[in-house]
Amino acid sequence: MSLFAGIDIGSLSTEAVIIDQQAAMVAAVILPTEAHSTKAAETALEAALEQAGARRPELARIVATGYGRVSVPFAHKAVTEITCHGAGAHHLFPGTGTVIDIGGQDSKVIRLGPGGKVVDFTMNDKCAAGTGRFLEVMAAKLGAGLDELGPLSRAARREVAISSVCTVFAESEVVSLVARNEPREDIIRGLHRAIVNRVWSMVRAVGVEGQVTMTGGVAKNSGVVELLEEKVGQPINVYREPQIVGALGAALLARDQARALG
Amino acid sequence: MTRKEYLQHQKTQRHRRVVGVLPALFPREILWAADAVPAEVWDPPLAVSRAGAHLQPYICSVVRQSLELILSGGADLVDALLFPHTCDSIQNMASVVHDYCGLDTPCLFFYHPKAPYTQHSRVYYRDQLQALLERLQELFGPAEPGALTAAVEMGQRMYRRLGEMYARRAGGNLGLGNEEFYRVLRRGEYLHPEDFIAELDQVLGRPAPAAAPPGPAVILSGVVPNPPGLLSQLDRLGVAVAHDDLLMGSRRIPSRLPAEGDPLDRLTESYFSLPPCSTRSNSLARRAAYLGQLVEQTGAAGVIFLIVKFCEPEYFDLPNLVEELKARGVPSLVLDTETNQPYDGRMATRVEAFIEMIG
Image (cartoon, rainbow over all chains, first blue to last red; front, side, top):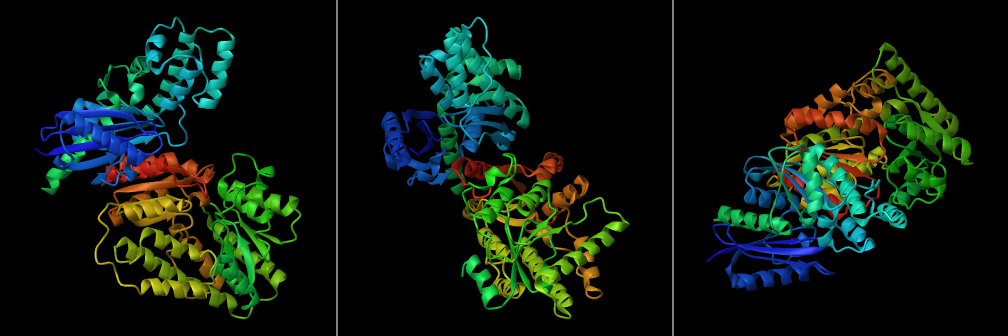
């Protein structure tokens, strides 16, 4: 049986997905990237193979993506995460016209055309403002786990205004708000609003078409998703494990490439 | 030979003067006629420490680094500095250098007319050429008889070769990758035309490539082809830059090169045949039409805008150019750059994703 693998080496986590000829997912793993991209890719792929009960020679083709894509010597091809998230989102939600991906270090908004092909995109390329790393720092400052941020935000009774998504400036603001005994829930909702406003400016630059699908680790935060849905004015598709969408897209592209090569 | 060694050699062995020139449009031929070698200053590789004291934070890195070069003594070998009136920032920098920095180096200014042009623009431009030549002669002594005509003809030989290089590249018949193309082109920023023309002849003598790069072709638009990492990435991705609309590139190649007549009239005629440019205030319609024409003629699949952060002339035009291209169905990518900025992973990802999108 021929299998196809996609590996997404992100700044915080590395995901590996293995699919079969029918694009059925037979393995999906998420591991921390830590300090070595190649090692992270190797470890994630081995874990995925073990989960699939398969061996390396059964992999007909491997595509690497994510910022560490160039450091995967055993990959047959490297493809950007923009193309891979587009392919993955289109496969999971075929009506997707817009993908919002908020990862550990960057955010992207991707417009898809027919067949899930990328027709436009934008990404923040200057700093990690308003990304997963921003939320990590704020959660630590507020003594909350990342998993708690969504429920806490949704329990807020009001919203505190946060004027910046710069991690350094926002952290100072949060310190001031904590000093004023502002409820933690209200601060978290304010932080989520700041992220959504930042992403919304990117969404407007690209435009909303069709269904909107959110990918990347921040999509697990129901507080951010809820506020984004308010902005977009429609429900947002979120896969049960949004972090693996890029790796899934890479695996799908590996399958397509293998077919094209015969 | 490094740029500095070359310029030093020109002074000591060829007894020529060296004039440091700020971007971008200036009459090279006038300097050559005065037996001076222009050394253009676009993006000196320096860490900025002194220039910040004289400039606002929103001044572009081209001006910031050029001022740093001057203040740090990097331009000590030049016999004069020439400031063309390219933008407000360069104009203000000229005042800073001339009035406040206590430099002994003579500062020259060159004011070229901005669009829309009237019947007086040509007269004005010709007067400016004459004034610059006179000022150079005051500084360096009288030009040899016939030197200006010889310089104009040398300039025309250079432009013909540059035009051929661009045309052959657009047709896929030039044996140079993207990185090498701009490395050759940028040597013209400081080589004496005799040496530069010899190098261009060498390049044009190379055999055409056996096959075109496998990827899509793109057009570059903006100021300078920086960061260099972009060009090597395009080479690696098999993407050919089919043409450019760069201020240091094709925007300085005139389409009309009059064969005879008064040399200042010939230069004037050439100036008014330059491609449209933000720094000459050409209309958006002309710029959009020009870009559209480049895309159509070369079959390029997209345009990459390389905009130096805080470059006002470029940013004024950019949103409309992007919209105009979109209306024509031409995808574009805008990269905010700073001179000497490292080509980081995020920028490389954006470029690669753009190529995947248009490929």
